[in-house]
Image 1 (cartoon, rainbow, N blue to C red):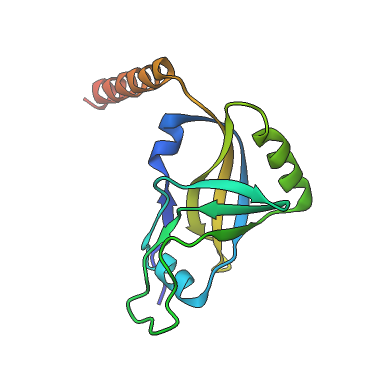
Image 2 (cartoon, one colour; image 1 turned 30 degrees about the horizontal axis):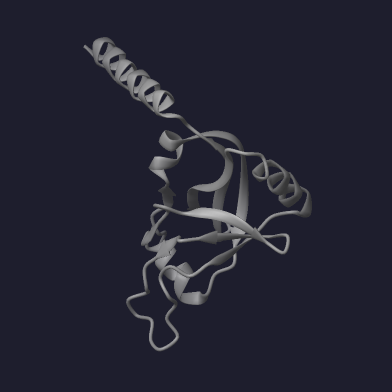
Length: 150
């Protein structure tokens, strides 16, 4: 039995931030967390990443408690460690020190080996006029698609 592919996106990320560089990281999870993610019960709303002692952690990622989990069920919004190479961690840490830059999760998915992966991006916050410009470009694209489908 093949489970449906999991592809959870942070839709606000591309609206609020200009993505500069992306990295695919592994996540340290418990047994009930991976089961919930495979069922698609996770959310990347209001999540961000930060460094502690040279390690990258994701904060505020919601993974719903597993329905069949018992006393050893996980807490929904615990902090989770991300797994990247030393070189990638150094690049991210240097980039996030610049003013206006932050590290945000963009997408959570299960790869072909069945492992949960999180795509994180070094991002620069957009100004209000940049957001209006993004909305205008999106509306124009939608109008063009409507015209050509007729």
